[in-house]
Image (cartoon, rainbow, N blue to C red; front, side, top):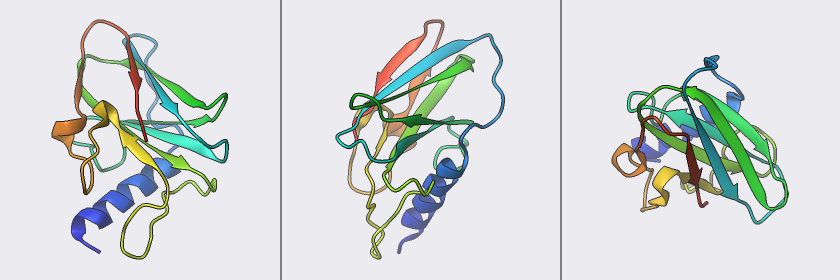
Length: 141
């Protein structure tokens, strides 16, 4: 297993363990993230990142049940800046992303901007700007 796969695995495991991270203020921007999900099994775990936390423990984490084919969360109190959102479908409710022996994910995952290339996601592909307006994102897995 390569170092990138190990880092990716650890990051997603941390995301799964964090159901809500640091308290956010009532002020700031909200980012609502919607993920279409084919299955009703399990839940979807989300992490909000900046560049220094990308592929590490998120700034904030949330969990959504799957209702009517969608998982939806809202990150509140986000200050303007550059962020990325990562998520995965925790089908078996074990709060971690599961992998094959060769490092390939067994559970679906996605990142903001929906740029899914071979290998782990990159900050450059996933980042987006938060300014003065609330945002709505859709992530495909």
